[in-house]
Amino acid sequence: IVERPQHLFMRVAVGIHKEDIDSAIKTYNLMSERWFTHATPTLFNAATPKPQMSSCFLLTMQDDSIEGIYDTLKQTAKISQSAGGIGLSIHNIRATGAYIGGTNGTSNGIVPMLKVFNDTARYVDQGGGKRKGAFAIYLEPWHADIFSFLDLRKNHGKEEMRARDLFYALWVCDLFMQRVEENGDWSLFSPDEAPGLADCHSEEFNELYTRYEREGRARKTIKAQELWFAILDSQIETGTPYLLYKDAANSKSNQQNLGTIKSSNLCTEIIEYTSKDEVAVCNLASLALPRFVINGEFDHQKLYEVTYQATLNLNKIIDYNYYPVIEAQNSNFRHRPVGLGVQGLADAFILLRLPFESDAAKQLNK
Image (cartoon, rainbow, N blue to C red; front, side, top):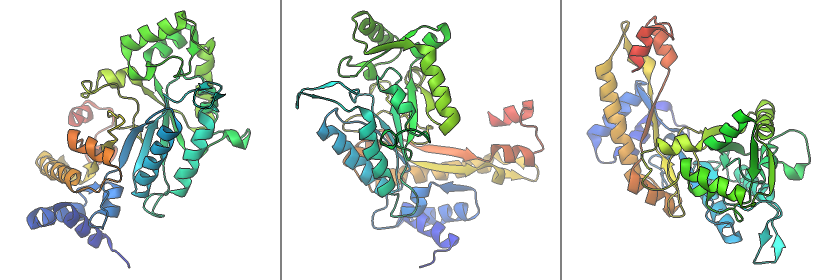
């Protein structure tokens, strides 16, 4: 079966609006005329038997146990099968050598576990061959396995210590950057021996972290700049880890009332709260800014009209979406997050004959 672009736009419009014919026609016309587009999963799956139309899913490791790890693995597999991208925080997984009470043994740490997630991302691609599975793994820099984490995408080294199909990100606290600036010491902990560090931020985190240092719970103490340069070396060689700043993300969030946010998503542009019973979701669309440049002027009225319709569409997607895991439905229905972005800002400036750094460009971008 061959689906032409116009057929795709109509399928997406009908999949979103169903019996609302007027809204379906309006959405079709706006997409067909290239005013905006919906996200790839929406284009893939709208008006199909399982219309999973959301782009990214944010998870936190359910528990530091076999059950918790493999329940989370199953969640990621089901989401990837439905064309969702994964952002997963693993701050609560104990470090290499940590005691395991259930077996009276010691932990192998995060690397062997991440190899399992790596193989899952390879095997369970998005939508059955439409595009590769994609997982971003988030870790805080106080974790005792941080140096092994930084090496996972490198081209050299032992294969059993590499997982090159995942993407990696650090959830960085301000205290670490302060220690780097001062060339101070930095303590590395195992989360089972220093609980709660991932569950707080800002001053509360600083107080808990320094208390654990005073109590001698650190597995190792290094110079903060040693870790910082290891991060830079990894970025130069592999392009990862991505750096996101935990305290800023939480202090500026409008979800502060829910708890501490522990990660971003695959693409690092969405920051939402996650928990055992909530897998955060981002529902995306994108406005094509160059399209709004008409006869040398930017059409703000048309921008309003298209933005209004795209926002209605995203709100309907939340209601009509197929959810591969119930925790994603819980989060989407409770918070109804909408991510309507833009593309082509520089192109719009070119069409308007505005230098990118000009005052007129800055004013338009407000």
